Image 1 (cartoon, rainbow, N blue to C red):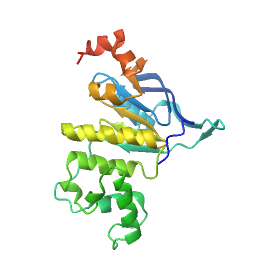
Image 2: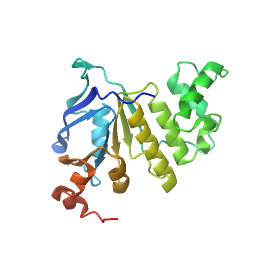
Image 3: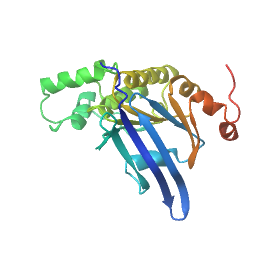
Image 4: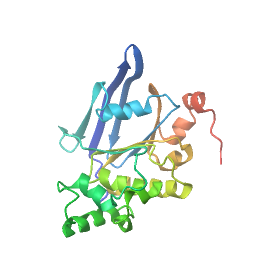
Length: 244
């Protein structure tokens, strides 16, 4: 896999959200180059989920999102991939990982006989995230970490310009969280994709994020984790970080 080109930029321009007279977000501007992981942090109720919904076009908002090819300075249609915090899956649901991936990634009804070519293609795509052995496993029997690998596979096929991860490690054990962040780091470094991740794990954010945005209806502070964590704005929200 090639290294990210660094010539594409996702621009989130002046995103504002109001519900009635209540201002939920105010003039949020974020520019992310491909091969960058931008992590959004903030207290509960700061507008993090609202921002993601605005980017995805799920709620009414002001502002826009553009994708710019900086090699020729042209604006192009943006492809967005999304991994939610959780999805509701019945424990005894007979749908397999193959069925789930095929339903999202092909136009063939999943109740038809398995297509060997599609099966091989999905298995190869799962392999990118170390999940190829899950292809015949029932989705309802997956662990939290296994499910997130499958969702990452679906969200990145076809490869998006912007990948949005909404607290994707909620409910996953400590080892699974570490593996997930390593997979995201690999994706960031080896693919031409920008990534926005919402997280509460400040230590892992410090380790993996290229840029951190502290949000509280508007952007209070942005920069490297070190810059943000040492700022007065951060301390007013979270208090001083403990040094380890």
